Image (tube, rainbow, N blue to C red; front, side, top):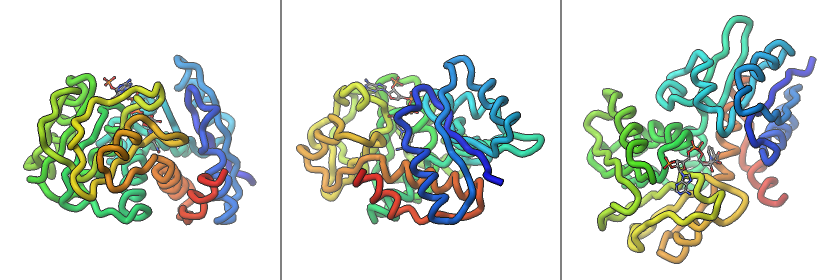
Amino acid sequence: MTDKYAVIGNPVAHSKSPQIHKMFAEQTGQDISYEAILAPLDGFAATVARLRNEGFKGCNVTVPFKQEAWNLCLPTTRALDAQAANTLKFDAERIIGDNTDGIGLVNDIEKNLKISLKDKRILLIGAGGAARGVLHPLLESTQSPLVMKVIYNRTLEKAVSLKKTVEQHAEFRTFIIRAVEFGNLGNEQFDIVINATSAGLTDSEIPLPPNIFAPGALAYDMMYGRETPFMKFARVHGAAVVADGLGMLVEQAAEAFFIWRGVRPVTAPVIAALRQA
Ligand code: NAP
């Protein structure tokens, strides 16, 4: 029997997840269906309950429901760290919630772009759900407590709150992490600059000093589908590599597929197919 999965969001029509999971299913011979479901802004929990009643085995969760999903589920360590869930797995009694955004980003940078995160100075722009999901795995991958990491956000309080969340972990207590409000970056340079804001959706500029990119730096925008002002800025101001978030999208989906099906799809052909589409 075909096992049913979905992505729930609002909006959700633009989502590439149905295409991605269809390609994963074909590649691995898994008998699944996957659809995009628009939930009313006040109707996420009801939508999840309906899917469970209808026998769905799990779902992905996208903007703006990741935090609500976390409140609804039994979180894995990754979801607990992020306080946001993007992958739900249903069994008879429970909704298990995981967060695969972090591993998706780290895999895209290290495996696909072949850029090591170890010992790198990181500037993470944004402090919303996406930034929450990736900070913990990013810090783990840098392995270097004393190398500078900065959370840079329009709203300072949210950056401070994210910093406090990660600093609660014993493993990160010795890490140097700063929370900085837009406009207040100093003269330091970074090896990896990640845009985890949704500023690109409205073509908004992010205020960055022109010398922000260290020699060889990666500029990574989690958005995909078009060149954002951040990506344009990075090209003009010396980033060695400028990447969008399509690889991350496929990598986080692959991890979700593994959670549900116990099979790891190969991601490179799926990324290539989406780039050609
Ligand atoms: P979110 O929870 O709504 O957070 C939005 C973040 O963007 C906040 O830090 C917010 O700052 C900032 N922001 C919004 N508009 C801005 C503007 N005009 N100028 C500067 N900052 C602005 O959203 P999210 O879930 O974190 O998602 C963020 C982005 O990441 C979205 O574009 C999403 O599509 C993308 N994403 C991609 C992947 C992938 O797989 N590639 C995965 C997850 C997310 P304030 O705190 O000041 O409001």
